Image (tube, rainbow, N blue to C red; front, side):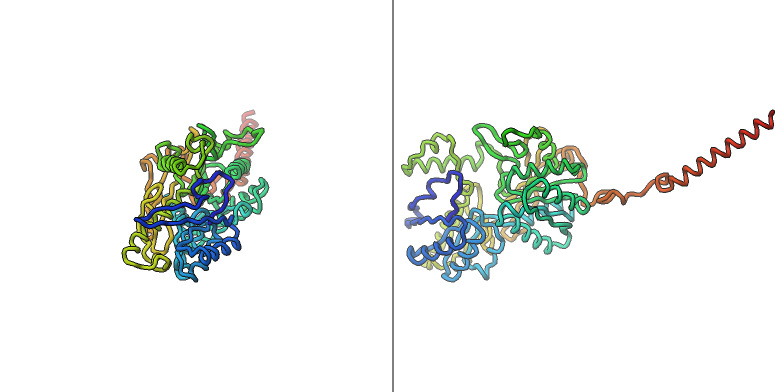
Length: 459
């Protein structure tokens, strides 16, 4: 089951096709649930009852996946979720004993975030998010980051601000609220346009000084890249509106005070794994005899954003079946397959690591941007099958201030003079200014009086 996306999807996902698995034939039946819960539940029953499905791959959204997860648990059927499915709730092995998740979840993102916080000696942060963009993203991230903080007593969330809409007034209000409580600000916004608006609002509120750092964290996020048009890359600080507002340079300067934390290492290199996989999808599409001149010529064609996860799902399933079939075990026994899923599998862009609870162990990347207007990779955060976190700086530690913070001082959790600037020791003059001025005046009068007396005495 899939969500129908506005972008052109990989054509092979829309057909009933046949794949070979060590001599076995795998028939694929596709149903689009469009992230509608009741539709997904109905299709799940149809696939199990009418098509005698051995496995359900999908849904691709959180709420439908939870419903279908309960159905497949009842029928003890394997379920592989992917796409937008990021809820850590699906890692509950008692409730969902047959569910394998092919997407990173927000709990692992939260653990990566805390690792970055620890690296820079930050122990508290504010969390600002949008409630109007996608109900299955930022609110779920908030729940999981709160869980991660609860489990790690060295960290705290100083303030949580929910923006009711993505207007300048809402962003202004959110920034004003956190200004007296935080300098490390985690932001969850999906739209590049909204990220740009947020940072320009921070500039207008005079909240882009050396005390602040803004961390945009999300799953399946392309970082500073907004879009690609031909050979040109559009970045998040560039205004796509017509006419433009003329603030691109201000926005670029604002984004030099930000990090992006995501599981997408979108380097745009033509030799990268993603580029090579895209070429293979186009090639296979052509080999199937599907008329797609754009796929072959590479013009105005873009592979579906989550096609790599679907490929990974099939590779993990194939790996588990290859260990199951020789033992004459029932391949529809979801619990049996689930308990033998933990391991490392070859994936579209590298190894796929599945943990004991069926969740995918991701690789996260922290990126920043310098005044040269080019994103740069700063830190990689890796987790193992036991969810141990390893942070790897991608720069010379002696050059951290220059490379990571563009020559500026590293922000502190609490500024030296406090959030209101009133905590620094006051100088003697400022503390006793009135008395000092009065004493100076009295001394001046005394000197003047003595001078007058001396003058009269001499006469």
